[in-house]
Length: 139
Image (cartoon, rainbow, N blue to C red; front, side):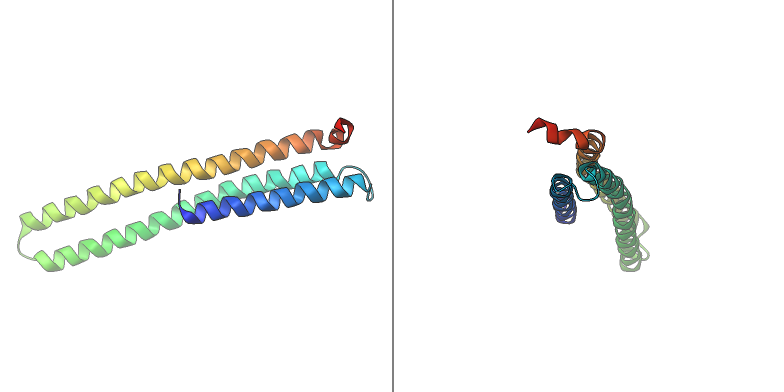
């Protein structure tokens, strides 16, 4: 899991906890009405969906950066080996294989980490959205 994704998840969960606490306090104070915890759940669901979109954007940006690095490495190899076709082909194949391995690994890591964050936010937010107004009856 990348550091950026970890920080992203921690920030999202801090915002979610802040929303839960704010929703609970506003519901307890009966500010305008008692549905603030349910509204906080709705906003947490929106955070979860946003997290999914940001994961897609991060994947595209990372993929483009990797593709650019691959292209630059291929250009260096072509310039370095020039006339030696066989050695150049071997080196280009090695670069392509390395690129493919890194891309698969990046997709797996990003997919798992973003998927966990997204799913946990969506489940928590949906629960609060549906039952937030009933939480006060538990105490």
